[in-house]
Amino acid sequence: MDNQQNEVGERFDAFATLFDPTTFRHLEELGVRSGWRCWEVGAGGTSVVSWLAGRVGPAGQVIATDIDTSRLTAAARPPVEAHVHDVGADGPPGENFDLVHARLVLVHVPDRDRALRSMIEALRPGGRLLVEDADPALQPLICPDEHGPEQRLANRLRQGFRKLLTDRGADLSYGRKLPRLLREAGPHDVEADAHFPVTSPACTALETATVRQIRARLVAAGLATDEEIDQHLANVEAGGMDLATAPMISAWGRKA
Image (tube, rainbow, N blue to C red; front, side, top):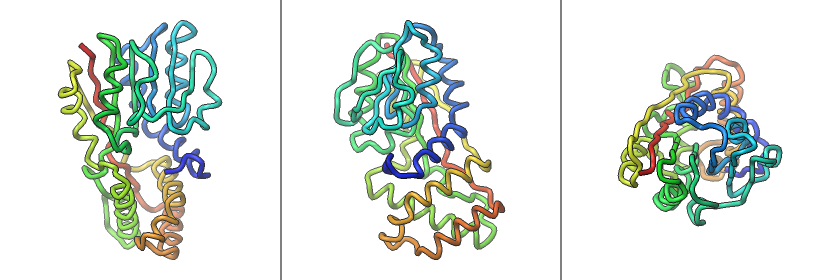
């Protein structure tokens, strides 16, 4: 998913609406406060970075990294620093962080194990790790209530999207593994929960932007026709479908 495409801003806005309240709740419970040093991995947009900056204040620091930092420009002022970084290939951008957070990142990283080790390595003793990733295999349907042709078409296109992700190396069942992976990697006091939006304007906006962004790939791969995609977008715009997301699983722990 190229961050330079026009639909990316719409997708980031939808993700923020859907998942920021859950993320912020977890960050609050982990105790983020003034003076903390935080690493926001694969930041993409600015909503979480800006929230962290407000919490840590001028005495703290937020290192925001991504392979493409073009959308972080608006937030890249003290206490925020933006750095181009590949969490699956590069070493940590610092050490002794009080918090490391990644959302919707590791599921797309080819060397996920290395990335997770790098994130834990960057924490100070007692530092907090929060990793949040979707699990599309746990709930693969965009329309869980598949009661008509519109919903069946939507689910077929979603199946095509999942194939594109799998072909690019995404692990669509990664979210459910997070609690075990965190325990095996060393953090203590590991807990997890899940958030599963079923229908909302943000779900609709996310689906529209996603389908527009990947339509050329769907057609090129023979997974859908332009006519089917146009029909689906018209169905979505009509507002009669309940469009869900994959469950977002959040797992957190403390470095020994």
